Length: 473
Ligand SMILES: Cc1cc2nc3c(=O)[nH]c(=O)nc-3n(C[C@H](O)[C@H](O)[C@H](O)COP(=O)(O)OP(=O)(O)OC[C@H]3O[C@@H](n4cnc5c(N)ncnc54)[C@H](O)[C@@H]3O)c2cc1C
Image (cartoon, rainbow, N blue to C red; front, side, top):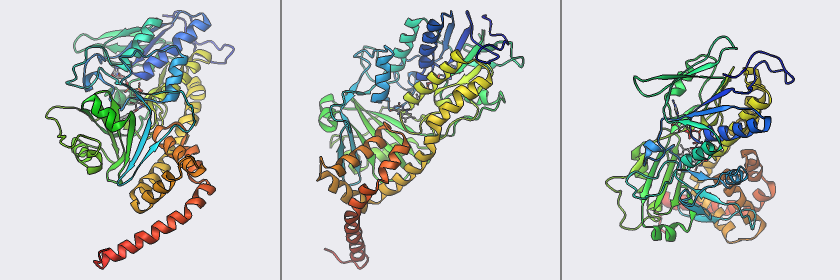
């Protein structure tokens, strides 16, 4: 064990990482690997010998949900740029599809979105978090999470492929924490000067950590639904043209629905206003607008890969105490947007706090939680309002169709570019919700659309009256 003793040094912290300190990371998903990567870099920079151990009971080389941290697994261009800067290369087998752009589909109208910055060379990548769908037959490894883990192992991190059962935090600040890990009946212990909770929100350990009673309240969550549809790669290329399709069909209970092409599979992801089930997925894939993206004789296969992971709706309260900090989904993430990039950001700020300031609860409060909340959580409040508004607007078919077709007919104009950027930022999460709101209420944008809106309203009212009196056109 190193010397993380109580000494007030230049930074004013009472508890610091020192030479030979041990860090234990619970969870080898993106947050765990990103924290390890940053910690290794800081240790090198400060000339410290720090032993880093990541625990994860999941084998990312398995196919299907058991080997997968279930998500649509789209790497935003901004995260991809950060990975390149960090020297994290993604081999060809890992990138399932380079994404050209997005297609925004309403109930009876679709519009192709283009990158708002012309000649933008950044790439959006579709990957698999585990080793691809259940029943897939590929031979090379497809797992993005495994690829990140291998990167940090190369940098010097140690990985123990076993789950953590319990965390013991001593009441004496000078005593290290203890990790109890392993599979049934053969539990082992490890002491750690700092423990990092990167266990996400789909694990039972979340409640055990809450039960430690230092004030941690996990984020609120909702159950989503995902399905992998196997199709021929030529059909997918033709039907999706390397674009992610985002659906705003105005259908309850869906809040967000996407289809991501990945070579010879399409990943369908649904987020709702309540917990979703397999039945919701079947309703969605059988909707006539969705069926248009699938072969005309397509039927739900007998066996297919499906999962119901949770997604966060809020941020955690007090995800830290002395010698313990929580990062990634189990801490703070942008709601419904680029979760893996939020994991990158929270891990980066937490590592900076631990190495530059200290590992006491005050250090994590001031140098991790407050800045991370300011950066990610505040914006989520606005995000919630915008998503509710967008839910409401996309249900108004009479309004959506004429507005989209007006803008489509003026491609290249200011109004078309403005709406494209607005929708692009909504579906990709490339911009904070605050910026999206400013774009949405832009007075010039709204004024230009007033005549279109009035015309659409008159047409809709007229049609309703005709319908009411049973008059056919
Ligand atoms: C439907 C859906 C679609 C999404 N789409 C996208 C997307 O396209 N792009 C994007 O960026 N984000 C997306 N996300 C969000 C993204 O999946 C998460 O934000 C991201 O995975 C968070 O990373 P994490 O490391 O915090 O947690 P996780 O990825 O959940 O990793 C946690 C790790 O901890 C391990 N673990 C848990 N308990 C223990 C234990 N007791 N001991 C040891 N290990 C443990 C788990 O096995 C797991 O490997 C999506 C989420 C959902 C639900």
